[in-house]
Structures are given as C-alpha cells and as structure tokens.
Length: 118
Length: 100
Length: 211
Image (cartoon, rainbow over all chains, first blue to last red; front, side):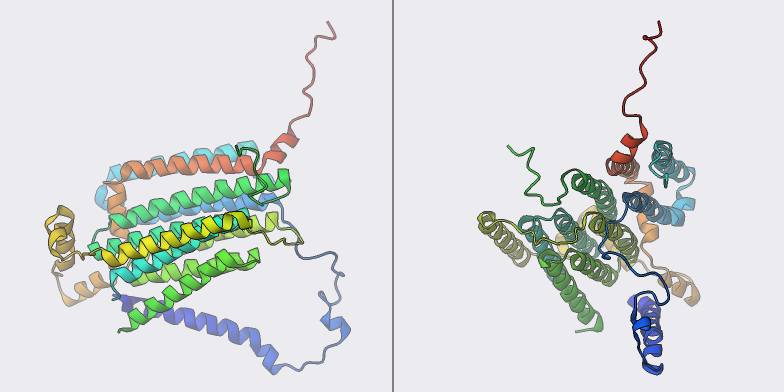
C-alpha cells in the first residue's frame, strides 16, 4: 500500500539531487577569476536602480485569485471523472451545474474588465 | 502505525500555534497564515479520524474545508490589499474604526 | 517501530517546527516560506494515513494556490522598512493564558478519552462501523493479476467521487456558489481603484442647458 509511494520518493530524490548537482557542477568545476564587471548584477547590461523590495501590481493578485478558484474546480473534477460512469447522467448534470456557476463568475470578471492588463 | 492520539496531539499543537499567532501578532498577513494553520490542524484531525474509523466522510469534509479556505484566502487577502491601499498599513491594531 | 512510524514523527517534527516559525518569525517573507514546509509536512502525514487524493489536493490547493496568493499579498503590502509588529504588552498576558489553557484542554482530552478503531466493539455495531468493517475485510476476487491491479489502484479518489455525487451533492453544489461569490467579491475588492478610474469623475450633464 504505502510501498506504492516508493517510486515517487525515488523520483523526488533524483530530481532534487539532479538539481543540486547541476546547479553546483559549474561552481565546482569551472575556474574562478572574478573582476568588477563579472560581479555586477547584469554583466554588460543595465545598471540596477532602486531596491528589490518593490511592491508588485495588484493585477497579479487577480490572476492568482482566479487561478486558485479554478484550481479548486480541477480538484473536484478529478474524483468526478473517476466515478461519473458509475453514477450516470445525474453526475454529468451535477458537474455541468457546478461548472456553469463558476463560468458565470468568470464571465462577470471578464465583463467588468478586471482582467484587462492596461 | 502510530496511535491515533499521536496524530491528534500533532494537530492540537498545530492548532495552538495557530491560535497563538492570531492572538500575538498584529500583521494582518501573519494572522492570515495562522488561520490557515488552524484550518490545517482541523483537517489533520478529520483525516486521522477518517482513517481510524474506516469512514470516508472525513475526507469529504476536508475537501469542503479546503474549498472554504481557498475562498477565504481570496477574499481575505483582497481585503488586506484594499486596506493597505487606503490606510498604508497592515497592522490590525490600527484598523479600529469599527471598534466600539 | 516501523519505517512509517519514524517517517510520521519526522513529519510531525517538521510540521510543528515550521508552524512555530510561521507564528514567531519577525520576517514575513521567511514566515511565508516556512508555511510551505508546514503544508508539505501535512501532505506527508496524509499520505501516511493513506489519504492519497487529499494529499495531492493539499499540495495543489494549499501550496499551489493559497501559498502563492499569500506571497502575492506579502509582495503587495511589503514596505521597505519592515517594522516589527507585535501585540501590546497589555493584551499579551490574556493571550498567553488563552493559548496555554487551550493546549492543556486539548491534551487533556486526547489523553483522557478512549479512542476507538473501526473494528472495536461500540463503533462496530453502528451502521458506519459495519460498513467500514465490510470495506476493510472485503476479500479480493479474481486472478493474481487482478488482485495486484486492485491493490495498485487503491486510491481514495473513486470513493470520494462516489460520496460527492450521491450523499454530499447539495454541499457540493453550494460550494460552487461559495466560489462564485468569492470570485466576484475578491476581484471587486482588489480592483476597486481600477474600476473607479474607468468611470468619468463627473458624469456629463444632461442636456437641460441647451433647452
């Protein structure tokens, strides 16, 4: 039962190990001869202005909020997709109502212009 | 498998940590995170009971809690953002217009 | 003590430590990232409790959704000078008493009560208990291959789906209304200024003047 998770654990270990290895390989193998230009934030690029602790625009928040609502919808779709053939047409109607209700909200947001990236 | 009381103890400690955060901190977003901690503690209890009683209803309840938590996060953080825009602060002690 | 017990205590330690860091840390960004480890630890405990679908949903909703939203909230309200915000001394003592009392109460409950399992006597006689015992002791049928297939796909998603489509249909539909209201409300609250900006400040006067 729980041994079903061993492949997942193995994959996570390999993924994390691969990430750490690849990120550090150049550090371990490559030569290090730093100079002023190389150490600047953007080598041969713009000179950075201001701090990095800037506040981001509220538009990102609206997109994130929209994502979380439809994320929930996705999570509900999954158990429905596994069982709807056993329950029949009733289940399809149920999920249709669920999706339509959320879609109304989406249309409303779209019409209100909350998603316009001006 | 660890006994049920150990799972319950973990979630009790988590719940008290959340309560402490809500009561001690004044940054609205930290308070918010601590409310999420409390909700998670309750979810953990529900799943533990569901497993030890062999009844799936607890898992359904966790689903509902998660959905309500997501709705709460969306609306609550929107309120925090609106608050910050109007008052330039997220200190809940300074938001006292409705206080009697 | 099996490997799963050790894993459980490791996860429990991770949950408690990172949660304590969330509620005590002075740096709000560190607190938000510490919350990530709390959520992941709880997902791990769900896996150990063989609630696999809930564990995946935990990662999808909490880590992928709510935490991202909280980090956005942090970035939207962050100030360059992070003032340490704590409760005033006056309200600290009652808050401490409440927390200590709650902890004592919960621990007392947990240690005093007699917790039953699905196969213990009083619960077994209830309809839910009967159902649970049937579910657990149900003999697997078919060839070896089929048994392996059944055991391999012991996911809880199908069970949850069945309950959602039958017994919990009304709450399920109500949730979509909750989500709808949250969607509209949050978008309107967060985008207030943009909506106001779009409308002209003074509506054009009706044509009384020309009459």
